[in-house]
Amino acid sequence: MMRFRNDEFIRTLDPDIFSHGRLLRRFPGSDACRFSARVALNLLERVDDRPRGSRPRILWDPFCGAGMIPCVALAAFPGKFDVVVASDINREAVACALGNLNIVCDSAAFAARRAQIHKSRGMNQGMDRRGAIIEAYMAELEPILMTTPPTVTIGALRGDAFRLPAVSGDVHFVADLPHGNQSQLLGGPLSKLLPSLRSAFPDATATFVTTRDAVEQLCHSTPGVQLRDLAHGRVVVRL
Image (cartoon, rainbow, N blue to C red):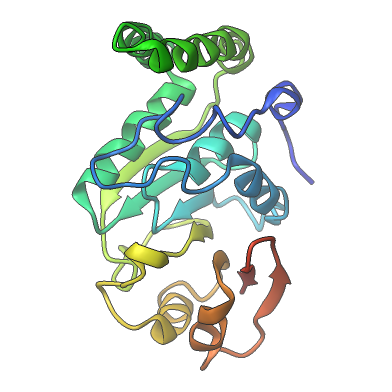
């Protein structure tokens, strides 16, 4: 049972605006609007948050990119996790994710991003129209996000998903796995990812989105995996 969910944020969520390269930042080489906030919301709602003892509940996205999943966790479910961690093997991704996490839960960072978007409106008519839409949405969102800031520890670190540092707590991995132009896992083959996480974090849950073509490889040597179809040839893999 969720202890707290921000129903106002969920009600007003516009995934076309609450996305990378729009309200949230993206880093050079990353895709704008790569992963939908609506899909992130769907995944996070299904994470079992029932406490197992007194250990902290940790959300960890080990393929964070620009940080969409951790950002939605902070905005939509500020009482669901005690710790939110974004990690990636790409140093630029980690820096971008941390900046986006701050936009969601820090009023100064939110204001700075809003000012940056306002300044960009002078570049051309298209930017002016888009910037006006984003600014209006941010004006609506600001009191929703900043009135009840989450009492959550946030962190971002550069790390290989096959060699993550040990932590004390109930870990829930949620991630959009690399695909398309970013389909190579630098730490090891896709078929070894779930066994590696299960070995290092035997009590953790894992919820990953991948392509239908990658499911067989991902689940090849891992029994007990649950699958759920998403739109556009994507599949949710749960461990």
